Image (tube, rainbow, N blue to C red; front, side):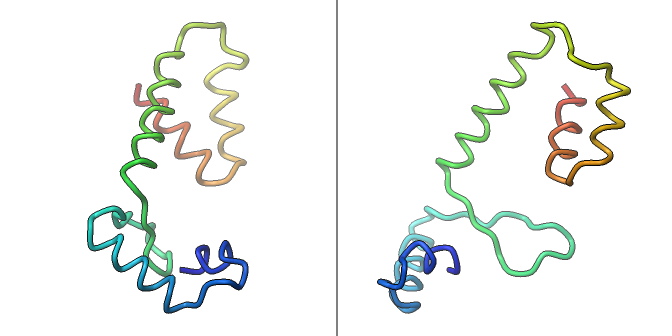
Length: 97
């Protein structure tokens, strides 16, 4: 809701945004995303966003082992330990491949 209101730049009311969201959620356009342990509020995504994310991951997987690594696995692991949790999750996914 917050993001939709911000994008509306003051031209949309909360009731307009809420009504539009409820209609679109009712059709299945929005899907609830499982949040992390201490997150507040619900998060939603769309089929299109999930498809785009799968395509991105697929592109990364197809590129694995097609070029020389720029650093060792150990160096990458050490670097990932100092970055935010989103980047760490990506590294973990790539390790599973």
